[in-house]
Length: 322
Ligand SMILES: C[S@@+](CC[C@H](N)C(=O)[O-])C[C@H]1O[C@@H](n2cnc3c(N)ncnc32)[C@H](O)[C@@H]1O
Image (cartoon, rainbow, N blue to C red; front, side):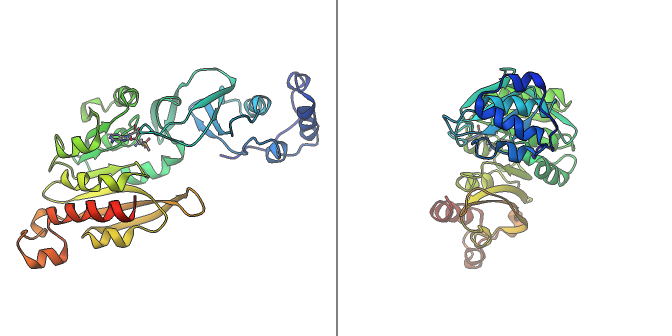
């Protein structure tokens, strides 16, 4: 999110400035914009706004308290500023935070596409940048559809799918995210259609959700392809759609087609680095009746057989994509 052009800096802030920041206040007086003001300070030009908290990426050791205070002055909706001290890491996809300015709390309520989500920015994953993507996917959901949200987080996909009339199973390994997911389902009036299943998504896909899902949402870009065989095990006999996010150096479409899955839609969601991108793909898993009997040589060639697909998926995707 970009910053607006700025006006003069308030006197109380100017008074508190250290010498280097006084130079910064001089630039404000010249009415230059925020990008100019932070140039060379190591402070990023953009931030993520989650509820009333701003999160910036700051290298450990880079000071940023005064810039964070400025950020709050210029954006009155921001009540607290935190620095992300590294990449999203670990199973829970979170990063260590450093408090820079304003309120020192990590719980906030974020509004997205007309829904409210309670998020703990320190203990749970949440990206406000996915709002449009979540709206795109959830617009595809039909009333009564059975949806498995494999990596549900605090529930933004689950809640928005349930609000379309879907019945949702939400698996999530982070217990804090799981508790917030339940709270968010209640807050948005869809608790009766969202069931939280704690623990590993592959266990859920091969257990409670086996043969059940008409749609599977897989938002774990770095590892999602490792769970594709599990996702297919959860698909209903009548076929299913998989909305998957894949982080990869190359476009994964050919491998996926090779496995007998058809691609309904594909878009490049973001560039993670000069070589790696995140792709959003809508895949179609055919109905069991179109997955010919295991013994048929034709089915082997076409790749419609479920166990053939599962075996080949596990082998090929582990090798080429992960
Ligand atoms: C990238 S986040 C996506 C969260 C959510 N879908 C969203 O859009 O905000 C991935 C989530 O998957 C969870 N997770 C990671 N590995 C998992 C696993 N094996 N089984 C279930 N959940 C897992 C993480 O805790 C995290 O909340």
